[in-house]
Image: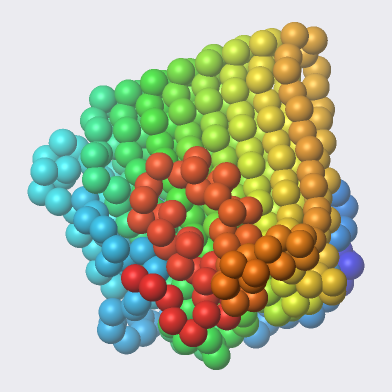
Length: 443
């Protein structure tokens, strides 16, 4: 499988495609040179096999990269509807369609404090000295695998949030990444940097303008959380079911800092997310929440790593998945504890609820511990809906659909309770109703 995928990527994105892509960009020389270095790494990694632990359960034989290309011009600028965008007040917003920014704003109060929020490429160019040391250098490694290098060579804009030392952003910020044209390849990048003592919340969502357009997203998320800082980051993936979604995501958390990271998987034809949580400083904390609802023939895959690198660190990962029809979800989790990371407290759990007999979930937790004074636990469960619960609800006057909704909502409630942002909880509840087949979604 790995060799076949390499051939597809090589044919789809060869040197000629790369040079044409570079000619379409208006970028400073240092940015172009970084792309060339990444493309060389990408070509070399095509000659190696994909990591079998991460990819052996994910069938990519139907994937053909040659069908998708980055947009050379911006598409229409009509407003794109999204699940979160108009549901609460935001301190700043940015929207991308087909790799191009269509709108961006930041409140004057936040701008006056030194906060930077907007188009990644523009801000990298205007604040190179401040931002370049973080971009694809601190969290996600360009040589992690062929998808990371592919992204580094072809990235097409994205969202940048920078919060200076001890600045608190009280209102959440919103980022939208959307596909409008058919056959678009989007390589958007999200970079969040919180200096020491800073606090912020970013809600980000991906969507397709129509259900018919086929697309490809090869994304990257980098979260840099400084000492005593606090970041809440939510990514709501809601592509249509003709979109391929690959992403490398990593968060680095420094001493006494905290990261709350919520990942929501609703859309896509096939999705694979590589998520690294790196606890780099003493007493750093990370809480990771996952909500996935797969239907039809969707395939959604996660590869998560909680890496404890210093003493007294704490991580808590809870994923919950609901599957129906012929869908499949794969979760492979690992807690890694370095020898110096004594007094670590690490936890990971994945629970799956099957709504059909033809759905499938593979859950594989793991531990890799070198320290001897730690508390690390993991677990995974998979089960079907209890028919007695459905009967009980229907005997109280509910329809079968209403009973299923109540059971699914109850299953997700444990994760909802860990999310302090009301608009996110409400949006997830409405989306669950839609996935279960309700014709209208209450507002």
